[in-house]
Amino acid sequence: MTTTVAPPGTASTTPARAPRRARRWGDHLFVLPAVLFVAATVLYPLIFNIDLSFRDVGVAQIVTGGAEWVGWENYTDQLGRDEFWHALVISLLYTGLAVAVAFALGMALAVYFNQRFPGRNLMRSLLLLAWILPTVVSANVWRWMLDGSYGLINTLLEAVGLVDGDMFWLARPVPALFAVVIATAWSFTPFIMILLLAGLQGIPDTLYEAAKIDGAGAWRRFTSVTMPLLKPVNLTALLLCFISTFKTFDTVFLMTRGGPGEATMILPIYAYNEAFEFFRFDTGAVATTLMLIVPLGLSVFYFRSLRREELS
Image 1 (cartoon, helix red, strand yellow):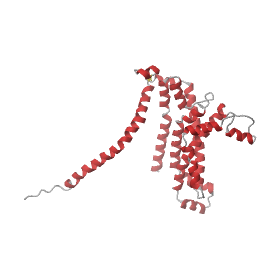
Image 2 (cartoon, rainbow, N blue to C red):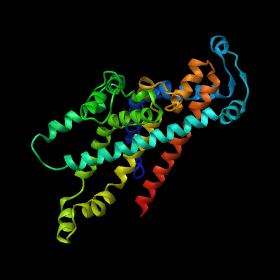
Image 3 (spheres, rainbow, N blue to C red):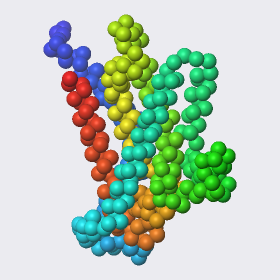
Image 4 (spheres, rainbow, N blue to C red):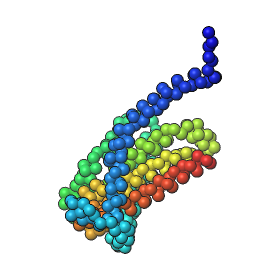
């Protein structure tokens, strides 16, 4: 009786490949629902919006279909409008100020809560309420507090003699812009605090002890040890906060609706007005498509910065 011996590796590897392929397909099937959900809720609306921006779309075309293809005409028309550039400038100003305030407060709170003291966890949990609260609730609370007739802030300032009479903060251009900046920063501060606190807790205490031995004070330890080691976390926190703030709609809309005048007319509200106030769905789609350029540019800068950090 002759026994056939298979070449080395053939008998052992061939049967093992099938279970490995099955496991790989099983992993793909587990991910498939998430992929379909993202495709249905993110990818398809994005493609549909971009397609609308290249067509002449009004109410009739939305109902019946058959919108005419106009190419880049909508983009050239939109980029030639002073209202669009005004909304872009206000968006960048509002976003930059809100991110700066939220990051400064988040860093201060993260450094504070990185220390050990009684009630630290309770206070940290209470601060998270600002982030957990629905935006509708927080925006309406801020609008009530800033009301000139019965608002809490006006009452407190009158009590200490800083203002005399009713001060309608949301009815004046500059105070209205700073009001929505503070309301937005208040909502995002706990999120930044959590990210930075996680980064701070990853820094070894031995580095601070070595800096103390070298005679470095608190500020020098912060600038020479904390900030350099927190750079990747700082970039992540700033990027996420900037993108979230740049596309913010509900806080500003509920507090000022883009007013007074156009003092708080940010791009999301401008696009909303184009589509649902004036029924220019094509130019509204152009505005929302152009809104993607700034976050995409920042994302590219972020990933290139991380790559440079890894290579250095």
